[in-house]
Amino acid sequence: MLRSLASLARTASSATVPTCVRSLHSPAAVSLSSVVPTSTAPGKSPRILITGSLGQLGSELAKMLRAKYGKENVVTSDIRKPDVPEDGPFKYIDVLNYQQMEALIVDHRIDWVVHFSALLSAIGEQQPAKALQVNIQGFQNIVDLAKVHKLRVFCPSTIGAFGPTTPADNTPDLTIMRPTTIYGITKVHMELMGEYYHNRYGVDFRSLRYPGVISAESLPGGGTTDYAVDIFHHALKTGEYTCFLSEKTRLPMMYMHDCLKGTMMMLEAPNEQLKQRVYNLAAFSFTPEEIAEQIRKHVPLKVAYRPDFRQAIADSWPRSLDDTNARQDWQWSHDYDLKTMVGEMLTKLRRHYPAVGKQ
Ligand SMILES: NC(=O)c1ccc[n+]([C@@H]2O[C@H](COP(=O)([O-])OP(=O)(O)OC[C@H]3O[C@@H](n4cnc5c(N)ncnc54)[C@H](O)[C@@H]3O)[C@@H](O)[C@H]2O)c1
Image 1 (cartoon, helix red, strand yellow):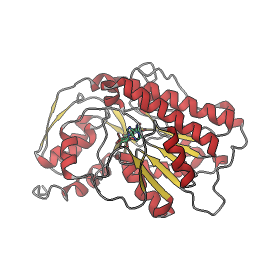
Image 2: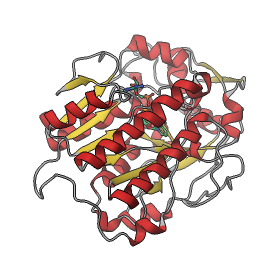
Image 3: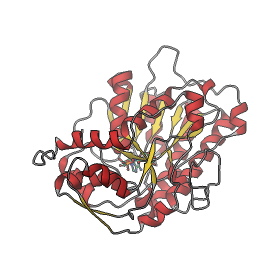
Image 4: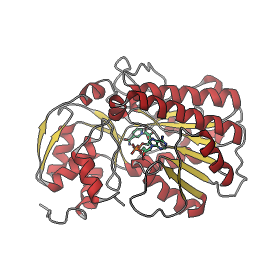
């Protein structure tokens, strides 16, 4: 469900922040034959904590995990109040507070942590000190708790973990990573620290480098790819959109369905299938003018281009990702392309903008 139409309108009209991430092959990880087993017995449902669960991804993944593992086995948490009542246990958890998280992990006998709390790319550039704190110290607390309490930890990385010196087309898993945003720097740190805890202490760390994620059900939280969600709301509300990236800016993107599918596959994969701890995840790439053209096949839309500070961030990111390793190692595949994603987004969002008719 959308957070609320009020918050939706607020976010759609005030896009401010971007995001990125990634992780590497680790020869040591490949040779490590086993990781320390988590506390989940075979056949028993894992107990899962999601941090930052009220964000774009957490609100969607929580529904999927609760449907699969049971409402009571998935504890959602954030530092703000849910807009709508949660469908299971919800706790106030600040990821900077180690003791508070440890108490929850012990009290609820948590096995897996999905760590979504972060400041994304655009917000990170506006608040670099806070981004450093939340993204680096927050992850450090999580990975230390994972070591002590034998947790499986999933923490996403992003295309923002790459930088201007990274090969921009078909960017592979293992390549140059010299990001120029604070967000990217914290995500490279997260990848490397997760791999270090895996290699050194056997922590069951897993990560995926997501492209920009597009969803009709939840709003983005301040990334450089947010325009690809905002544009739908503006098309349906006013038929006009001012894009903060230039018309030719090509970036890797993915529909939420595929992001959730890949995340569930990575979260549940037997350790023997994982030949590395961080994988690229890809679906398709497009430019603002290409998505606008697809949307115009359904509704009228005028787009003006007024690039802001996010253009420089986007220009430092890859145009497309190579996710061959994920496809080979754990049989990842995506279901949606640009055309099918646009059709489904408009069908779903029309419910929130009933005044807009079909062409
Ligand atoms: N959405 C995307 O397109 C995208 C792309 C690549 C990677 N990612 C990654 O996926 C993860 C989730 O992204 P999202 O889009 O859901 O982000 P979001 O901004 O929508 O949500 C992040 C949540 O973290 C919470 N938070 C912030 N500080 C916190 C703290 N100190 N303690 C606890 N919670 C705190 C916020 O309240 C928010 O609800 C992030 O790690 C992000 O880097 C997202």
